[in-house]
Length: 260
Image (tube, rainbow, N blue to C red; front, top):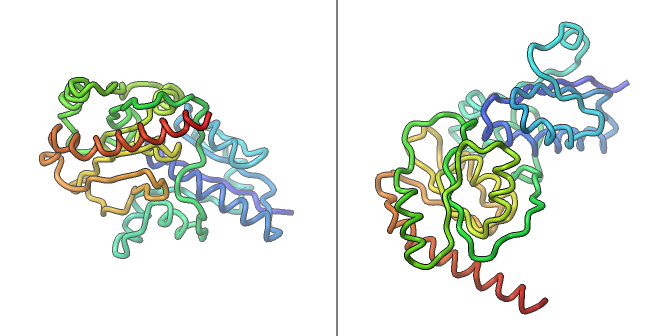
């Protein structure tokens, strides 16, 4: 008989999505080493993303709190993905959040970005500006130059739009999936874009109490990060660095169309 396992997922969207590659790796490792779990439960407070966890393991039950007493009494392993404890444990060595989660669970994830795919057809040359999602953890400070950035992009003749931070998760997946380039403050929007392999320019504030590598996305070869004070990241400063990425994306799309 295999172990019965419970995973407890964070109630903030960004931190919850980073748990996906760790769970997939852990359960896969158990399978190939002859220790496959008999039963897996996942308690996920965010209803919109429960389908992503179900896809991690055949037969996984994704439930809502409170945890029934019968489940608590029968499980062999109960693991809570706690981002604050994970950060405190690994801060000194600058671990990524996925590595930190894995350290606490005893798993080394082979891939850092969450296994999420987009079915949308990319619209070549389009730029999507994203803010932090309504379900992301509330952080001090925001990028107030997003509207000016959009106006400036349109003045350059670039099709650019601003994404609504109140979209439902599946709607956000659709919007990001259609974009060619995604620009914005670190959050679920830039995480999805990186998981989709998009060209990404992420603004990562240094005053959010985490080190530079905590939620970086360098596994995506088309990802770039601006780390520092948001006050220094005005619209023209970001556009000067983003236009190169837009031009590169346009050239790539042009070559793809030539091959067709």
